[in-house]
Image (cartoon, rainbow, N blue to C red):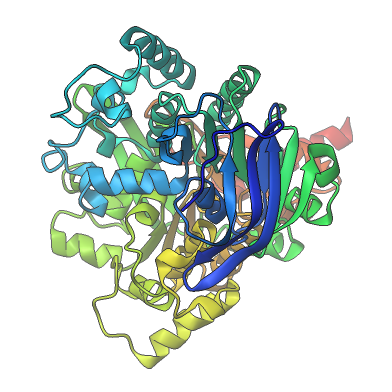
Length: 569
């Protein structure tokens, strides 16, 4: 049990005195010492699986110590106060716990009749919910109700969730849920705030907004510990860093000094996949099978109450095309994918065709789903933690959440091969829930690609991954697409983190198609004469209205004429 000492010792806020953490039968962070002094703002930086989240749990008295003590020194601390009342931890696991509580199964978000008993955002952000009051508790609120309402209005406005108050938690997108949980955490008015991967799943505008909120809190004097694997996400107000690797603190000190460490420099490297082999693949593959459509949506509209989640979307994806799906949080990306994957029951009634077939019956839909695989934040949140990593990968052969079918020797060998490619062969027998969230995401990627689908849907696959794992994932996707000639839909909020095979971009905004564009790839540049690359790698606006852009050969002919004309001038 973490020992709390109310007596003030010098200017220390937190002291780790020669601790070691016992976790899953192993000892982590042996003989760790760390002092957090008042006025300092800390961040913890490290790769996936380094133990960052485990150390955060120990600070909150949620991971047992094998030795040593953790001392907190809060002003005015009462003897009966425990860390849970003073420290607020916001992490991806926080969202997972909430989602499992609010929705009983993976697709329940799309079945409104089943989720009618779930809480709304307004109920979740009520003062009774934030203070976790027992409905039979006698007495008033612990905080001032008027001040609470003012704080809720201010935080909701800054994070743009005011329009979500009447919606149910279970039907929100991944990014919208994270915003709501963040507001809930801030309303607790903690003495110390720990944010584990706070920017994951957010679009650029929301990340910038959150940076401003964090800066205001730091200036107001709230001690904060931000945990990330991206040095570019560190708030400007961060003064000190912990650098973590292999469940040890390998460096600690001022921000400027620790960022010079080789590991910190490595984590800050760009992660875009830009190998020449990947780009040369695009040249050979982009024009194959243009006549065969994989997905056809014709004037598709999806409503949730009076709100249009998708509004008159018309879009066609053909074989050989690899699309990036972009758009801010709440723009309708996940709803669009739910129709394509058959998770949304409205797929039966809308003007939608998959592989040229309308999914009018359940049997037809299940037959079509065998040709595709996917990875999404929702799947990650709902996947049971008790299965072994090998079983999780094998479940991809059957599109199951959990493994309920016998696997052949060849299937298990294929699954082990994908774990080996992703550097997780030693995790095959380990429980899925024991892995770090980044490693869990890679296991789910192996699950998605194990059966070599004709259509691969990856919804924010790089979320929570460090630079090495992002590079590995992007390279794996490029290699898979090149070898199998599958088609890809890739969702991201980081425009620089796309596979090299991406040839088209579809951008949604407020449920409508904002832009449908064709991306010029590096492999085509030698065929354009002496034109400058910067002029031809831009994204070209397509025909608009969600209609498919002209094929690449037509665009190439147009460009050749323009280049030739320029030469004559």
